[in-house]
Amino acid sequence: MRIHEDNGTTNRPPRPYVLAAGEGEPAAAPEGSVMRLKATAESTGGGMGLLEGVDAPGFATPLHRHDVAELWYILDGHYDFHVAGEWLPAATGAVVFVPGGLVHGLRAGPAGGRRLTMIVPGGPEGFFRDVHRAIEADAVTPERMRELGATYGIELIGPLPDH
Image 1 (tube, rainbow, N blue to C red):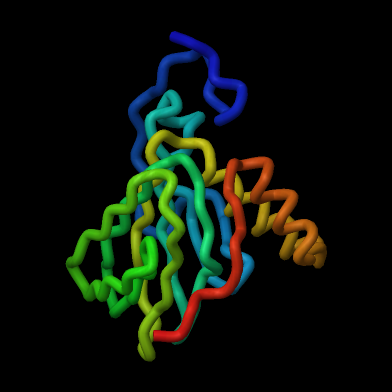
Image 2 (cartoon, rainbow, N blue to C red):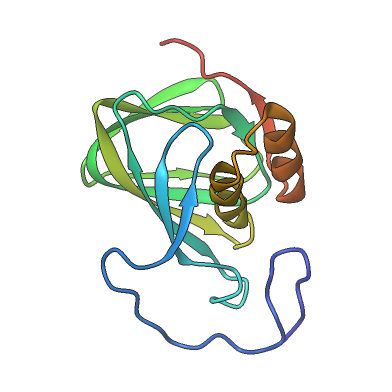
């Protein structure tokens, strides 16, 4: 197996594991999503990252771009995804896929929501772990978020447009 220094994998093969509800490493989005890392590049041999997120009403990410693909499964609530200039609505049970390289962002509806976010291949999920650590250290600044984004190949572009 190849070693991927850029996404945290090792030359050890991944091992099966189970995480119960509520388990996983704490993570967060700088805009306020409370998250748990359920799978990481390290735990999957680089294959994927998986996060569970709980979002307050109106939670919104900035527009951003990265080379990895993302897939969301909406567990509860309603979200509007802005992808390559188009708004895509998604409610409980919906799946949203965004290939790598496209500018995108999302906004939770008026009741908030809960979602799974899969990142393929894994690695950039570490951004959310590091954001959680920055929040705990009271070190969240726009400059720090840009630095963390650059570390994980995430280009922060700007706020979501109105729709």
